[in-house]
Amino acid sequence: MRARVLENFAPYWNYGVHPLKQDDEVSGELAAYLVSTHSPVEPIDDEARALRDAPAEEPQEPTGPPAELDIDGTAADVLAWVGEDPERASKALEQEQAKDKPRSTLVKQLEKLAAADGE
Image 1 (tube, one colour):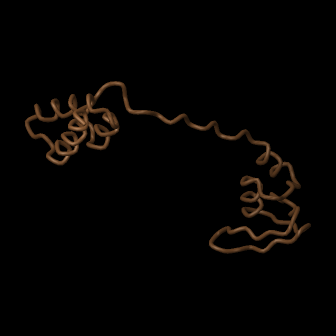
Image 2: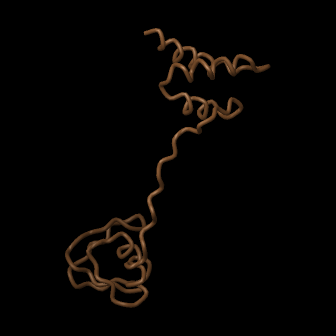
Image 3: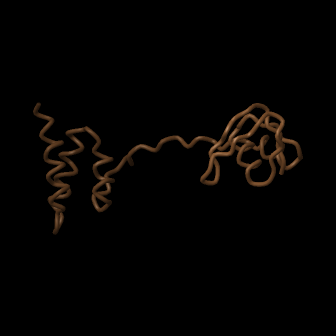
């Protein structure tokens, strides 16, 4: 894979700074890196052009908390489901306290969030 440098610049690659001058020719992994990161280089061969023209990955839509509460999930999952919603906090708190071994830290956090309902 080969690419031609279009302007002077110094990319950081492979734990080092690589000063490049306009019209330098780079090859191999450095060329692949520069082409794939849309650096100011021009692909010279078919392999480099194919890498440049490869479709960009579709951005993943952020996933929100699940619609239903999984009280047996991690504390982080329960808190993500609750968010800032005092009603959800009360529901999660009720379900967590009904367990044989409620998680004390989670209970405390849910109590604080549920108490925000009265404020």
